[in-house]
Image (cartoon, rainbow, N blue to C red; front, side):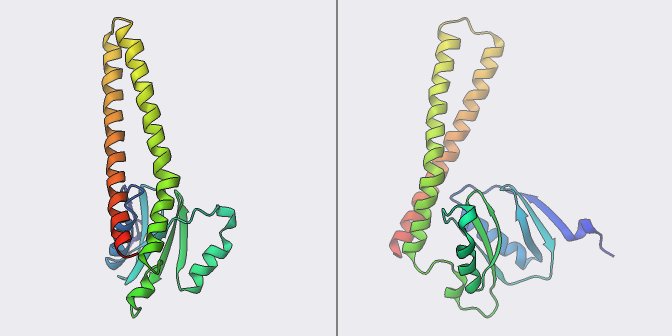
Length: 193
């Protein structure tokens, strides 16, 4: 007899905001392996054991406030999509794939609609992130100026500077990676618009 631990699986996985298609594919592949998506907090995914399923998962970024989404969810329900949850501005939907036409497994009717969603994500998520990175850069310059050019740096200040430098480089790297992903998506959907 299988216990609860055999029927629930938690996986720590990170997708940046531009990798929503990769996340959709990951959830779809997990269902095909017998793990139905239950929920996520953005980095920890919970699955429950099931028979392998042919389902597709789609994510949408509507930009509609949570308290005004009743009609939005109803529209998806009318087209056979099961609403699962919202996290970080994205709504998660699931639909059985068996016997469905390929166009019925998409939540967007054309490239222009996909492109519109990418633009919404960029405006609401990526641009503020770039602003935060730039503010962090200014703070970094201020700290270096104050701590190293005016005073004699001690070991603690060097450790702090190295740690701050690593975090800043990591933030810049992740942001550049997201920008590259968004530009790829924009190019992809512009071709089919």
